Image (tube, rainbow, N blue to C red; front, top):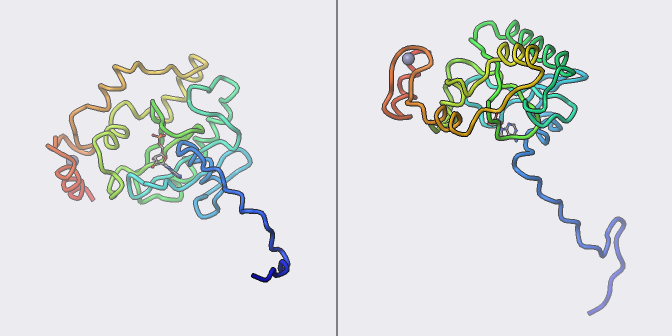
Length: 195
Ligand code: AMP
Ligand code: ZN
């Protein structure tokens, strides 16, 4: 077989395989994706949640590495205050939706992130009781509560694993009335009545 010469830019090296990032770093990756970024300032980035659990669902993250709420101390009060200002800005822009801001007590993804989520919880990505309870029980720490705890204690305390299990397995209850659905399909059907 005759040898041919290499074309411009062609090499004999095999392409270097990109190392696959751990799934829990997905938010940090999305922060670099212009399609995912909704707003940014020098210190914070707002991204669209990739698997939104409501009609409006954003995540607010610091540009600097802070792995979770458990790494916060009083030096972060300015940053967390800026999270609140960003929430207010988004609320002022989306006046026709009822928005809440808060943090999961036990986050699954790395990099501190605050959820901004609309009350409708109308989304095909909302599939499980864990999804539901993570936004509708005290597993969801409202922004104001986190800010107050940080001011008072200078840190955020971890919840116990028993508390975690208890919150996540709380019986389903509508977040807009007293209805107690038997299962997720019934809950989703019911949520439509509140739209
Ligand atoms: P948490 O339980 O507080 O860690 O929530 C993580 C959130 O990140 C969830 O609402 C997910 O839907 C969302 N999410 C997961 N992966 C990505 C990604 N690659 N980009 C944007 N949002 C993501
Ligand atoms: Zn209801």
